Structure formats: structure tokens, C-alpha cells
Image (tube, rainbow, N blue to C red):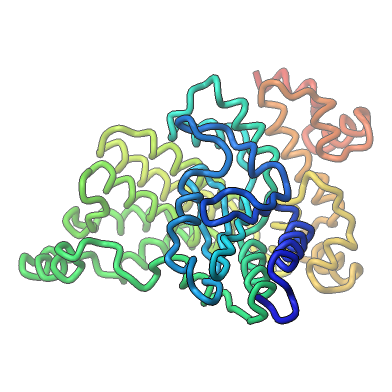
Amino acid sequence: MAKGIGNDEGIHYICKLIYEAYRVPVLWVDEAAAPRLALGPAALNRPSVQGTGGLPVEVMELVRADPSAEAAAPALPRLYATGFLENFIILQLPGAEGAIVTGPALNAPVTGDNAASLLRDHNIPPGQQASWLEYYGNLPIISRRRWYHAALLLYTLVTGQALSVTELLLAAGPLAEPLYPADDSPDLDLSYRREHTWLHHDPMQEREMFRYITSGDKAGLLRTHASFAEESYGRLSRKSQLRSKKNLAVSSITLATRAAIEGGLFWEIAYTLSDFHIQYIEELRDIPAVDRAMLAALCDFADQVEGSRSARHSRISDRCRNYIYNHLYEELPLGRLAEYAGMSASYLSQLFKKETGTAISDYIQQQRVEEAKRLIQQPGITLSDIATRLHFNDQSYFTKVFKKYTGLTPRQFKQHSK
């Protein structure tokens, strides 16, 4: 315990500080995982799983079974994440003082389709899903970096000693230990592949293929892809050839995403394409379909890069265009863009107009009209909703700007799109 802090009083004080700083549930539990102090109700309102509620069973078992519970000094904080994406920090206190459990918290919101698919993964009956959605909605959202800082702060408050993020993460799991069985190591597989001349592809061949994506050259991409031998692909699943192919597709799309961004594709477009292609591939049920989908995804990235390379601008202009794309649903005053670009508003305005031939305000209007065209074709979204979401002052102004760039009113465009 930090110098000058008594046992019970000091632990109460530390728990309150963590709770006030992060607004995340904090519990002080005894050796049997029974609460001695609880701050924040969400920790005790978890829906039941297999007849249990409150803290997850595995968290209570960690508190009870930790071998450091009888040590003279506190152990390092333990970071624990459940299969339901709840995050906990568990810090065993010295002697028989129990442990401080911080959590649950989420690193990102769990809502909508994500929540439904997660609950299906755990075979949660449909009748219980509403209570889980409510539970998730009440949990605090804390970024991973800030969560690490909470663990470091808790340790320092209890011990009076500093702890680095590296030490925290090394203590959190077997990062330095092999995660594969001892009787099936990479060394054995490497020997087998060399003996039978069943080698992976040349990395230069891979670089060449993704370089074609960076340059938007689909023909070159297809030529290089055709030169890959089937046996040069690695085995990415022990039990399923289909799973191996899907893993290969996911890794290829990940590399293609980076190559496309390097080629100038807006990163939000690239990441969104990646998400959709991977989601589609995950639903496929046979290997040829996965092979076709992976190649189609790579070609899509090359096409998207080619489409975005019609005008090449300076890094500053490209960054501003990307920022506008990502923040199109927000107010975008010139001063905000200038601050982001790190230059004066007048100089940015001149540079952008010189390179693109369009004033920044006009470019933002054009992009909002393009976004409106996409939204108009989606079911269930009214024209007034679109105008409000894209920050047009009123319906008539939205109609005026839309017609300026398309020659049609929004309503006429909607009719032509059917």
C-alpha cells in the first residue's frame, strides 16, 4: 500500500479515485470474491448466463485462485476480457485484503447487428437479448489506451510505484511464450516444406501484386495473381481447408487495404471496402467461391484506386479531402480545416483552389450532394432527414444546391433512381 495510506480507509479512497476518474464500476472484494465495497451499479446488473448473474464466473475464479493473494506485496494488475467483450482490471491486494476489480467496461459500443451476432455466438436465447442490449448500453466506453492508463494508475495508487505499459502487457498474458503445441512447432513444418520443396511464394512476387493495387493497375494485378502456385500458399487452419482459404483471403484483403490507401484511396473508403468484402467471404461455404471472392476484392481495390487517381494533389490537399469525406455529417468551417492542415485559412484556401480548381466551400457542397444522391437511393430515409443530416439550412436550400450540381431536384432524382 502506498506510504501514508491505511488499509481499509486507503482502499476505500483508492476505489473512489478510480471510480471518479473513469466512471467505471469498481469493486473491492474479499478472498471469496464477496463484495466489500461496490461503486457503480452496472457490475452487479449483468444478465444471467447459465444461471449466474453479477460478476462473470471466470472473474470471480481469478480473484479466488490467484497465487499472489498471500504475497506480501500486490501483484501486477491483470487485464481480463470476457467472451462478451467486457473488460476488467484485477489487482490482488497483499495478505488477506482481497482484490480490487475494475469493470466491466467496453473498448467500443456494442449495439445493433454487432450485439445480435455476438449473442448468437454465445447461444443467448432471443428472449434474453433485450436485457443484454440494455446492459451493454449502460456500460462505460473507454479506449484501450485509457484502460491501460487506468490499470497503471490503480497500481501506482496502491503501491506508490510506477509501472510501464510494456510491463503491464507482459504481465497480462503469455506474450513471450509459443501458443502452439510443442509437438507441432513451426520448425517441424519448416523442415517438411523444405524436404518436399513445398515452399511459400517469393515475397517479391507478393510485393509486385500489391504494388499493382497501389498504382490502380488491375491488368497487372491479374497477371501477377495468375502466377501464384496453389501449393505456395500457407496452411492457415489445422482443421479446415475452407477456414484456411478464408484466413488467406482476410490477410490478402488486409494487405490490399493498406496498398490502396498508399495509392491515394480515402482510408475510410478502403477500410469500409475491407469490412464488406471480409463479411461476404465469411458467409461463403465452399473453397472456389472464396477464391473468386478474394480475387474480386483485390480487383475492386485496384479499380477504386484507379478511380481516385484522376487528379493527383499535394499531401495537404489530399488530407483535407479525406478529412472532408470523413466528417461530411458535421459542420466544416474553413478554420477547422486550416487547423487540421496546420496552416492559415487563407493559404489553405488558395492552395486547395489552385490544385483542385474548386473552392473548399464548393467542394464540400459537391461532396454533400454526392452523399445525398447515395442516401436518396436507400429505403426509409426522407429528403428532409437527408437535408438535416448533411447540414443544409432548410429543404429549399437543399433543393437549390442539389439541382445546381445534378440538374434535378432531389425528388426528381429519386424518381429517376427507381
